[in-house]
Length: 103
Ligand SMILES: [Zn+2]
Image (cartoon, rainbow, N blue to C red; front, side, top):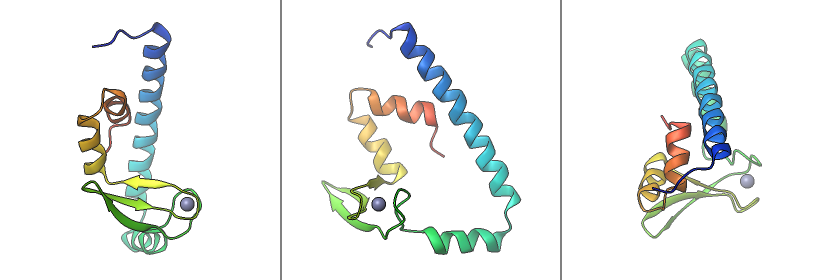
C-alpha cells in the first residue's frame, strides 16, 4: 500500500466529510419530496446529461454499459460498472468509492 503524504490524508478526510454531509442532505431532500414529484423529476431528467442536459445514449464498451453524451463528451457509468472498474484499478478509483460511498 502506497504511503500517503499528510496533505493527501487531510484532503481525503475533508472530501469524505463533505460527501457525508451532501449524502445526508440528499436523503433529507428525498424524504421531503412527494412520490409524484420524484416521478416527475425522473421523467424529466432520466437519461439526460447532468453536465449539459442533452439526451444520453447507451453504449457497451468492453462489457461495460456506458451512458455517453455525444454533445459535451461526458461518460457515465452505473454504480456496478464503476465498482468493477475500481477492482481492476491501482487504487485511485477505490479511494473515490471509499470517500464518496455510492449508495
Ligand atoms: Zn453533456
